[in-house]
Length: 227
Ligand code: DX5
Ligand code: ZN
Image 1 (cartoon, rainbow, N blue to C red):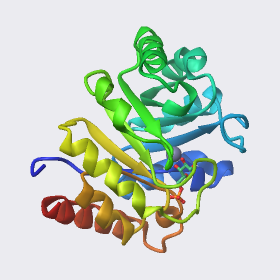
Image 2: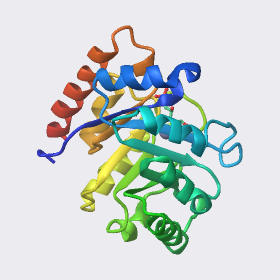
Image 3: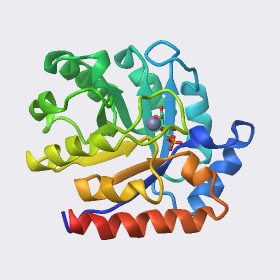
Image 4: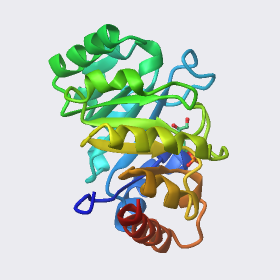
């Protein structure tokens, strides 16, 4: 684990939607590695956010790669639209394709659409054991530390054991955690083996965003050597 990089992916869900371009420029200047874009369809999750036209608008102003988190019921259907809109990582939820075969079909649709990096996500109450069969087929596993749908929820520490388990099984790709990550909770995520950290409210709500991002990075780097 020692040569792993830490990636900080602030969630644009917490930025001012009337000023997304300014938010993107500010957060990149503050040290963001990726930009996390939360796409919700009002069906898989009880909230609606943004779709491909807005992702495209973001990609025009963004320099950092777009880390697009699809909380939608039919990710395969929209893969091409999100790739064309500029997604770099495109992540779908196992819960909408809850078997290795169904997830493989979504991954195939993503690859056919020309996706650069494929991610698969699990909710806090979804086991990760079946993902072992998909280790070679995905670039990123997103372990949710809240139930998806809203920013600002409390971190569910018990999911760290799933991250540790994935590393113990030899998973070498990115492990991202999302939900309730802050300067404290990031420690146990990094110790467990995560290397990509999403944060919305803790970053955008900070009085000193560059300092907060640096602090997250320093803490994660330090703790990932402990784990
Ligand atoms: C939750 C989203 C998260 C959210 C994180 O459904 O997937 O990306 O924006 O927000 P915080 O960091 O505030 O929990
Ligand atoms: Zn997210």
